Length: 217
Image (tube, rainbow, N blue to C red):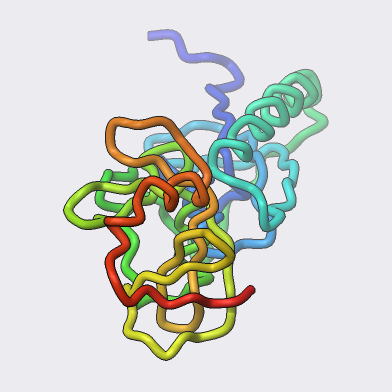
């Protein structure tokens, strides 16, 4: 059997050895990393363990979702691969081994990974929403119906209410968390299109129930 003279190359969407595996973009956002990027690497028998050729970095700003990062990294990866191949073939790039002691793993996502648990930090929940957008989407049950959360903001003021309590913040639905309030800016009710939190609340007055707290911004 003939093998490629220069081996096989892979375009991986992280700064290896951090976030080997199937969902590196999601993992970086969920962990609160300041940056991620692209690594051009040689393939071997391991999972994203091959020697590295080149890298490019992408800053993860607070508004980045997994979907938007994927689009940016796709273009970045294509550009970097085109730049890398000639120099690698000409011997100008020497493959560098990964430091396995620094390796982290990003397993394949499941729908359950998108579930929001309101006993957690509001900052972690906001990152989870961005990390799970567009798939598998962040979600929780609102009166027995699945409600996807596509975008949220944070109010650091902690309301004197138990975790998971429903609030309103300037006519937007919100939920009390362990250290703040998660404001639902964009949601998608089951079987419906994405809508603003304000629009959802207008049609869900009966779902909110009595005794809902009003919380100023």
